[in-house]
Image (cartoon, rainbow, N blue to C red; front, side, top):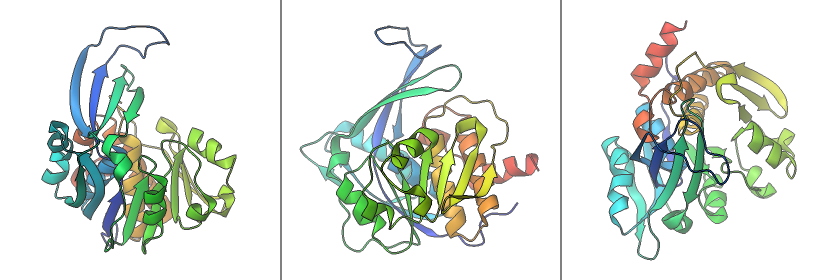
Length: 288
């Protein structure tokens, strides 16, 4: 399967974090202390992950975000810079630290994540942001989400972490990306059948793309040995938005996005795990 017929430009309005990761045999129960098998630091943040994921798939990407004036900032931005993501609209704020995420990963690749927003709470959308695709996440303020989704172009909202989204914002969203729990939470307050496209992810069970409440496509990821699912959902969302905006049909775009998510889960860390276009094409070719 070839890539999208055209590679769109992408603007991401989103979070930048430094991930502090502990590997454990299993996730601890409330009140329980477990020994870690190792600890590491990786660049992360849902917005930054999606920006780098799109760049590694060949898109020209810019990021709108914020970091603190602290040592974590350079480390959190390092892979984005190396990956060619335009960081001209990432601001540095003096009164907040760079965002951090505390992540536990068990032997099955399952995770628990606690995020301190830090500088991400200061993200705003400046004038002059243009792109074929605009992506945003709920790790930035509501005003930034609304401003991002009001920009021209194909708009995609990864509604995570779960919280209510204003109806007037949802009306501007071309692609809403949620997992099953996030879908259920949003459906309690929003008419998701009115959305042009909603993709619901279910991890290893795959994903379903709904158009105005009707199933348009369904796909499952190729079998892989999962190591760490931290950024799999971010990679999936970026790949699906790039595929749909680049001219792929629903089924092809969804299959590619599932494969990107699966590949991401085979490696440790968030951004270090994100696959390249060549790796994606090789996996798809290997699995027919």
